[in-house]
Length: 133
Image (cartoon, rainbow, N blue to C red; front, side, top):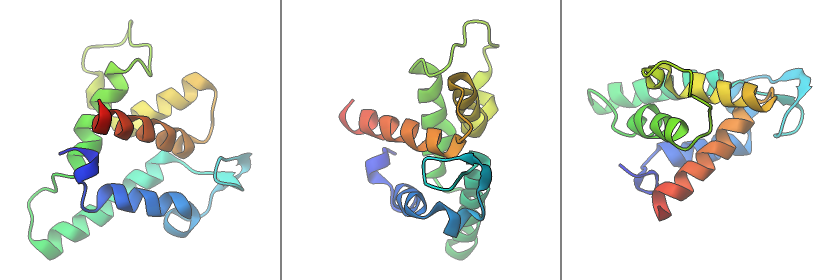
């Protein structure tokens, strides 16, 4: 599934992006973030999305939501293959770390504390490449 075919994941991410505090709770006010105020942790977004997907699955009776593969498979693979991280000395199973840990590693490598802001910038590039690439 391509991101532009997303029924709920990409639209939900855009909604959260507009008002992350409403969906993800309070920000770390000790660090400036790209959304104004404090910064948010991408792990909080992952927990919210997992709970949202679980609710959808229980209501719709689905076993596994294919849209989650956009993040867990496609986006994670893109993070690795696009050179966002220097993986020259990393083990070959880096993909198993998942998109959250990979995003945090990119943020750390860039010296940024707002991992949610880093996620959205990377995800925008991923979506653009998936649609036009």
